[in-house]
Length: 308
Length: 319
Image 1 (tube, each protein chain N blue to C red):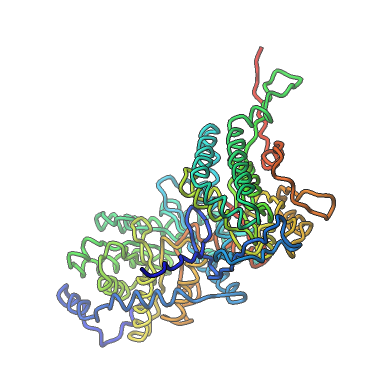
Image 2 (cartoon, each protein chain N blue to C red):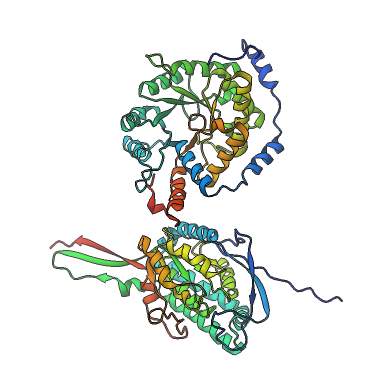
């Protein structure tokens, strides 16, 4: 029997529930991280060849924003309970594919199998944790406001709209789900620029999302060069908010410039962690606070006459 | 429109007209569609794109043809035509506002002497199923309401059953009804409703029939039937007006309508106009887009070119 020919992989983008190639036709080689943990200063992986990933262009980013905008009203209109169920279903599918995720995280981050498994488990738990918030968030951050008059004054959170996310460069799955789940749980849709050098767990997450119940366009995943797409998303007037977490450790990306570009249409901006310009990636293993959810909410306040 | 060349056969009876129309060369369907597909792959960038966007905006017949149309909606559409983009006063205005005949006077009043035309659909639009006196009254009513242009529909039932003379005479009669008391005349656009004509051969025949009967424009569709305007059909009609000018010296306009929603679509049509009919047709006098949503997308692309940032639907008015 002849030796089996290896199946070489060239992955695609995830936009509007479909898997298109980059409009530019480009792709790039993805390599494993050296077996150590954190990679070199630029975050570049120098190990064995893993697969080819699509290199998205600004036009792919534009198309992804269109898809996210289209999906947003329907996703926000779903009941909070329903969104929670849909997200929980994602965690189920992640669990079913955890072996694949462990392999990919181990290769992408240079972790041992045991550490990678722990990271994947934490990622799935994180997703479930956020799924649980779907129908509780409004109770915690909304409520009845005391006013000096015969009125009910009620504040309720609403999703901001379309959120661009620069996903963390180092933590390829745990970090990724830790920035996506809090954004979509409240009814936002998102366009995610994945880790530049560690995109493969994100590609698999795209396949997981496509085969769970998340409507197409709610999450759009763009693999490629962060510095190429980030300015276009930051200045895009149809993007309501941008999460700059992944600007930390991204090569040729200045989060200050991105924040300035975002100001042109008064986007909500979440800065990367760290002091001043020294952006760092947070420790994703810690249980998060609510800020990643509340940063991408608007507050609707209603006055209603109470009578006597 | 009486300068039809001598070498065209007479249209004295239906048989003669049928001989002439059926004597037109048949359309190579595969070749036509391949040509249209080939023309739609051109990449238009930077200054050419800016020119094309402005040209496309100036060619739009901004249209609202709904049962639920109100005078208020027509007025707001007129306001949009007068100032398409409040953030940029250099934005060109569309060519016309296209409404039902009973609302023509509302549009006329709102547009004043801005130079934007009022186009009204008539002759029992969109089906065309009414008796001749009703169609003519419909037309006169719209002209009296201040319409500069009349978009009539042909009787597809008569056309498909071979009663070409009836269609011909209807167009002639409607053309006559477009006359105003002062001797001037409203422009007549003849809607072929190509989505109901079944074959490309029929589209070519209907185009020649409409041109010979005195239509100033031939228009693809009402927008109420799918498929509406397609690139191959428009290409075919552009060939017809080109050939007609060679044959008779008379230039006829073309208006695709329905289904053209994006800047990219509009670019494809402009490329086709330039390549097939020629640059003479690249003005709003000879080529129009019947559209409503297209203007919004063109404005977004225009803003993108002006500011360098992708724009969003919050930055153009909703229809």
